[in-house]
Image (cartoon, rainbow, N blue to C red; front, side, top):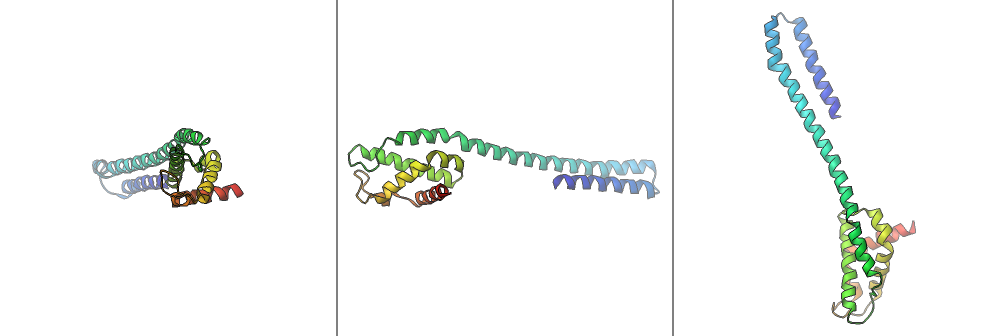
Length: 175
């Protein structure tokens, strides 16, 4: 679209110049002066506008690429955190379980926030973490006892973000 506009602008300027040359009764010096004052600055303006639009377009493409790289680069960190939580028991009543439960809830929260703000590749997160997320969500949902140290029940620890991600993961698992 932008290229077409630039081409049309250049063609119109050249056409006007040709018309001036053909139909004017001005001297060659006046025509050269007219070219120097109107046509060349107009062409320079069109070219600079074109360069601006091309750089904006390149910047948009670069931004999209950087976003994709960012979305995939931090997946390893999240993977390491989920890996640590695999052996943790969410509903264990022991004292050392408070740290485990807090760790799992923090990972779930982080996963939900990253997905909500589109900071992670949804498909990749789904493939890697959906089973653990669903399992932990369901354990929290049925845990009606207050978790020692956190002083809340499982359902009280479930945020809206958890529920949105849970529903998303459940719907994808059905497909």
